[in-house]
Length: 130
Image (cartoon, rainbow, N blue to C red; front, side, top):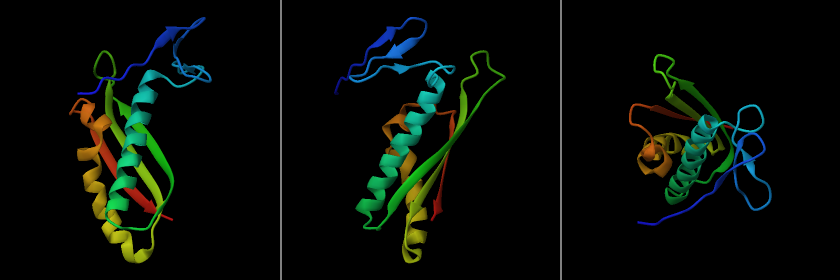
């Protein structure tokens, strides 16, 4: 088991993730909230995993972007994440698109961030071919 460490400091008003060049402000009003960071971490990890799966499947591609949205469960006191939707925008030749779409089913099972989330959070992945 590997151990990794991060430092979160109390800035002048908000918590900040210490970074070498500039701290990341962890507040919705000034940077990204911790909930946004969690959803973003799942999206970025999913993107890395999908890229790796495409490479290992010998599917030529160019990754353009990931559109990410999330919902929160307003029926619970802390309003935790209820769902995360990731739309991967990639350039893939038409002859490979069916295979590339089938590769999506492997993303969640191989993404350490998604695997670390509460299993009640619904994860939805889709791909748009440019």
